[in-house]
Each structure stands twice: as C-alpha cells, then as structure tokens.
Image 1 (cartoon, rainbow, N blue to C red):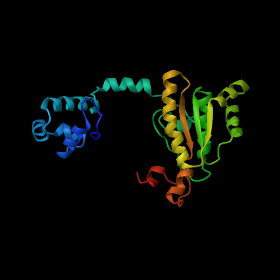
Image 2: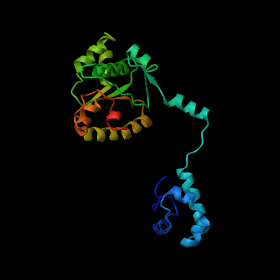
Image 3: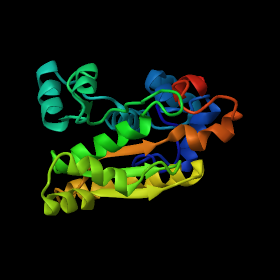
Image 4: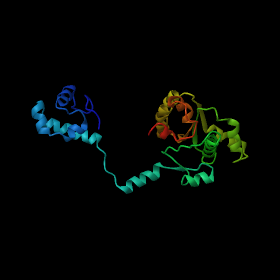
Length: 233
C-alpha cells in the first residue's frame, strides 16, 4: 500500500504524518496493522480520529471483492479477439490477438516479423474496420507493401483507401521517444474510448528490440530472444 503523506485523505495532516512516522508507521499497511489505542496514547492523537482515518484509508486502498460471474461478464464486454489475417497464426494464438494483452513475435533477421505486423495491420484495418497505430522503429514499414496486402483482400480502391486511413504510422528510432509516445497514447486512448468509437484497437511496435538493443549492449541480433528474457524479467 501507499506511503502516508499529508493530503492522502481528509484528516491526514503533515503533523499527524510526522507523529506516526515517529512510531515507525510509514505506510497505509503499517497503520492498518497498528494497535490504535497504543498509537493514540504514545503519539498524543485522538483514538477516534485514528479509527476514522484508518477506515477511510482502507476504503480507499483495499480491493473490493468480486465474484467469478461478475468478472466473467466484465471480461466478455471488455475483451475482443482480433484475427491476424493468417489462419495458421490465429490457430497458434488460440483464435487471434486478445485486446489488453501483449503479444511478442520473436525470430531471426529476415524471418518475417515485419510481414506479420503488416498483415495484422491490414487485416484489422480492412476486415475488422478498426483503427491501428503502427510504430516503426527500424524503417521496415512500407506503404507499398501494405497496399499490396490490402489489394489481396479487396479490389475496391475506396475500401483500400479507407483501410489505409485507419492505419496511423509513427516513426520512432529512439527508445526514450518511443516510451514517451506510448505513455501519451494511454491518455489519448482513454479519451477516445470515452467520447467516440474511433479508438485505437491495436498498437503494433516494429520493433522494440531495434531501439532497446543499444541499451542492452547490442550483442544479440534483433529478434533472436524474447525481450523480457534479455531484460532479465
């Protein structure tokens, strides 16, 4: 739980925080486990005020219980399965990409990672008519190849153009710029979901390794190992 600080909740003043810290009560968990009668006596604080303070903090920081049925209903309304457009890959992924999850594609140079990313972008934008954010960090994304994939799905030029408009491309060749951009995206997506149906459905990063490798020593060829193992997660 969080550290106790002035303003964390009504009634928690800087003076109270300092008195509690003097008794080695520094976090909400410390206060929840403390003997409030003893704390009140040794700190010179009101017992009733401490009880009220603990009640407010527990209500603010504790998890509320939910039954399995409620969680399942929430999952059904908040999760979607998006086809990649590649039947064998969908089968491997248990029907496709799940919203709210991170899927990492690993392989050696030239193994087709970028082509998979382009296929996913084309299928989500055309077949599912959803918006895609494509973050290109290695220069592998080409509009001509994306158009070829769309032409294989439809000969209607208007539908091809509509699908291309649903794919926003951002080029980021620096890890810090990429992290800033992804952080900003969180707020943008939240606003889009609250105001319209035009929210980004899929974020494709091609690739994280290209911008993270310099920080990792650059000894491993791109795509040879999952990024989490290289970061020691």
